Length: 159
Image 1: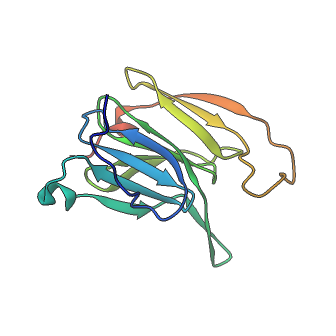
Image 2: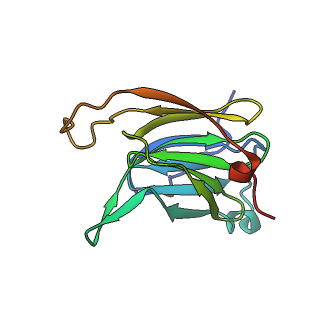
């Protein structure tokens, strides 16, 4: 019933999503600047050395890098890996402990608004919706929910 810690965000711009690790050791935070931060709750200097942030959900087009907000994060409960979804329409699966992207799914027709793994980790629900980052869309985009089976090959850390 009380605040255990109060922290500044390690990301410079507006936070879009925060999710706690299933193992309760930390959290993952995302922002509108196309970045994700992996933070740990233990305040000891040895543990804090492990925190980091990385760029993602960016696309190079005609030599110009477009940066997209990271709107959604969902943890796989068995593997401690996580999915990120951005306004670029991509879903990526990450191994946060080993700092690696495990896979990227095909591009969805609109930005990813929300993600959720099933309790057994076998299914990922993906909400694709225009998020109005660029005012009105040029062409109307349908809001769609996708239900996708995921495999251990896509979600399990590589040894």
